[in-house]
Length: 111
Length: 114
Image (cartoon, rainbow over all chains, first blue to last red; front, top):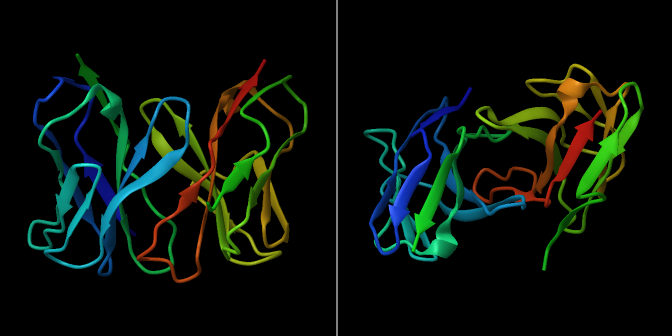
């Protein structure tokens, strides 16, 4: 089945700092790749996705590129804000099996 | 706006009680899922369903059961609640053959068993 390794948190950054959260995956098929975000007290929301190699997903200033050769899908943002404080989950998805999530990376952005 | 609605945000139950967690989606999605979320463990799949009256065990089904009598509703049942079932429970839904579309999640139910 699919599996994912996500960098451990927590990550603490100052406002306007550059963010990278690493994610690598293994998959039996050709997965789609997702990043979800969970704000305090809420469920998960889809942040961005990429469905084939070299695709770049983007949303709210976040980006991630599907790197098939390195089986990676690292999340980046050029300038984080306090409102980006949340937990971020990487998830590969192959075929008709349920999504498998990483353990999540907690990001805290301080003003 | 499409929605997955979980009936309770916070729930406190006593050990040994039978607990029902309800989840309803209004997107006509075929697939529905129950996860639990615990610090340091991430999200773990309890049960899922790809059709009405169909259910499949996930990674941690022990102590739980589910019911899917209607397409839009997927209920998680704790037959006899125990303190180790204190957790955040998240329901999600998706389209059939949904590898490219992702899941829609509810807001979660934080269950405390005392």
